Image (cartoon, rainbow, N blue to C red; front, side, top):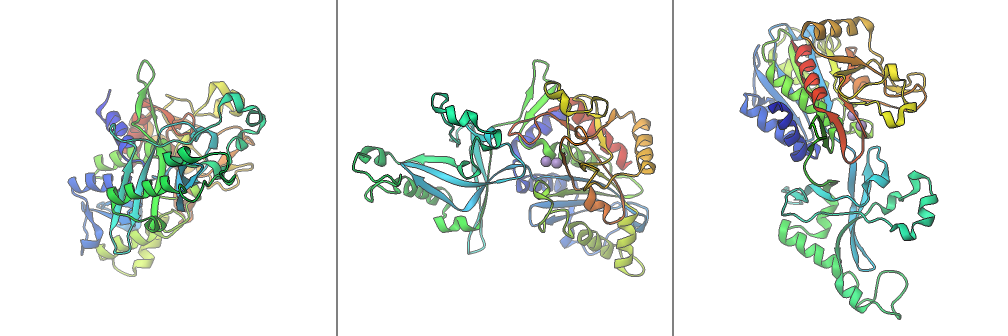
Length: 453
Ligand code: MN
Ligand code: MN
């Protein structure tokens, strides 16, 4: 197995939140000479800098020899993934069981999150300005968490429901602990509210809070300023007798983010300035200050241009730079699923093992919401990939009216640049554990290198 594939499996296993991705990539980038732009007064060809946006989005630049106004080669991926977020007032106890109340993030099939081991990763921010890392469930010695489901013996009614209603979103609550005292004292004269009698009420919750206090030094009200993400527990693994695939959480879109990062690190001598853009919030529409619909990219590029000391206005140079840029919107595509073949147009579906997927347009119905890449640009990409022996395939998500989806491509296109979606085919996309082919990861890495050259 190639080392880079093993590195990717480690990355997936360790970086299950956008913050952890930013932290890891900044660490690696700094080892290789990238510096925080904040501390840099001027830039010249060959310089390496990064802009860290709120610890949740990241842009790396390698300054090229050409004028920045001629544009950049941008690899743009997203590092947020579907998950369950803790609500602002998350911890409650009901009938002796202590729960974490959640609100799901991104497009999930809710039933897939029942009865699997879960981890809690994230941060709690304190009023004194300190931030505490929370990380439970991913170490072998850690306990894990879980959402329960109804036993088949009593699931008659549940099994009649539509899949979307099998579990109510309000019931995607994660078990944190048990109030044993409640069980001791629960008897016939207990009230029916499920809250238990006063003497034993919330004893379990108080116990969990005291554990949090001891472990993290936090009070219950500190959870008001927290960002806790419930994610599948455990490491990503190679899949199949032949180990030809990878099973891991968050491959949409960390497979493209990691391949982009590695390609970006390996190409440091191109004429054009190279940019690696790792955005947040894609799974909920790219809104927010760390999402691609914000001024994340143009603000950072303006700072770079300012440090380059261009003649004339920074604003004019910025607009020229962005509209002359080209970008691979590095995002995943739905892999053809032989067991659900009727959802795909086989000749226009991406196949597991078929190489990097180029997707001219996403969106839904009549290409609604798509930026629809130009054929002139596609021809340039084909030329590069053929030159460098990159295995590639062209595909749509599924059949024309079978559904749809979007990526960050349209936000890049707003600056007037050429952009096309290019990434890895994924089976069971958005499931807690997603499947990719190792060979596709390698070809995608190779494709990104080819694009930057
Ligand atoms: Mn994606
Ligand atoms: Mn997605």
